[in-house]
Image 1 (cartoon, rainbow, N blue to C red):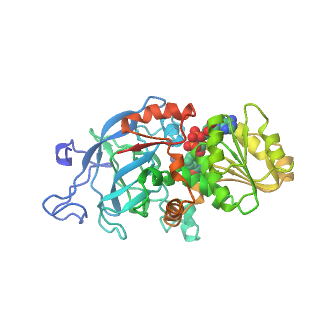
Image 2 (cartoon, protein in one colour):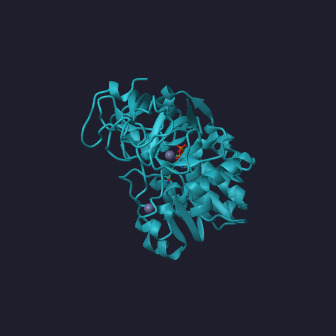
Image 3 (cartoon, helix red, strand yellow):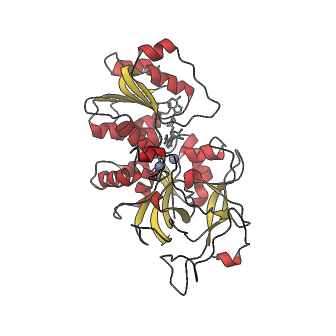
Length: 397
Ligand SMILES: NC(=O)c1ccc[n+]([C@@H]2O[C@H](COP(=O)([O-])OP(=O)(O)OC[C@H]3O[C@@H](n4cnc5c(N)ncnc54)[C@H](O)[C@@H]3O)[C@@H](O)[C@H]2O)c1
Ligand SMILES: [Zn+2]
Ligand SMILES: [Zn+2]
């Protein structure tokens, strides 16, 4: 692999870091003779809105203060990666995709406590700062100043890459803030634990944390991809009495049953609102999770609630999407309408807990892994995701 010294230099914002050496902060992972250097690996890059992703050489700097570099072992393909490619998340192309990842710490920058080279970690896209107005109020799961690596990863010509959700892990190495690397039990296989880094945590937490699902509750989940099925698994674990899975794809509904759905509804062939009511004694569900991100499913989810029920929106909408609802219905039905980012999780608390559930056989993360693919398979995996052929494709290295 070429090292930083072989690469074109940049100055100013996004400048390549100095290599460790005299006067540099210590970096764990190298040796005095061979300090850790910026390294070139291949990464999956979205270069322009809607254009197919390509494999590009990317420069991953040596970790600076407060940063760690992680050898990625597995990274799931999440729908949000496709949103990046489509320009839904923003216009900051080029993006380095991949954000649902597990691996091992490869090098540690100065001032990093609690992480050592070799530690098994799951990467988090929220790393509470401890200092913003939300953290100070004791709500770090909403941290508004979440930490990311301060040095950018770049293309060979120095062009900075927007790392998807501050991670960028469709690459053999990635650079993150130390707080983003959450130490987990190394006995769990990374193909499974990687999914905790986004979709599984988002869905599981939407039901268990944001939705507060409890024993005997009735639950409906709209959209049974990786995110929706994790919500179903959480509802099942919590002892929900009825779990209605709604999708437009029979294969997804079959998977949903495997995670604990008690009823399935094909929204192409029946009215999902009526079907949820029928499955819940005519009332509607106590908790409805919207895991698609469309106005159609949001509206259905709204009406599929029982009186005073809760709707948790997890699906990421297109920025142009709008919704109109009768104000009297909003008032009269009561309850709560909320959105949830990342399942309102606190990664340092919840990632190890989900790994524990996995290792003890209570959360079947393996069932989310439909296939493992090589790095060059991401574009084709997007197609299979859209065709409904997979729950999760996971890139392995
Ligand atoms: N809020 C968060 O923190 C967070 C985190 C991860 C993902 N997401 C978002 O959650 C959503 C789901 O992600 P995913 O990875 O599970 O995606 P996915 O593509 O695997 O699953 C989406 C599912 O919705 C189904 N669907 C599509 N139209 C439908 C309709 N009209 N009615 C019912 N079902 C329908 C699809 O068949 C598919 O099974 C995406 O919008 C993603 O961006 C949000
Ligand atoms: Zn904060
Ligand atoms: Zn994701």
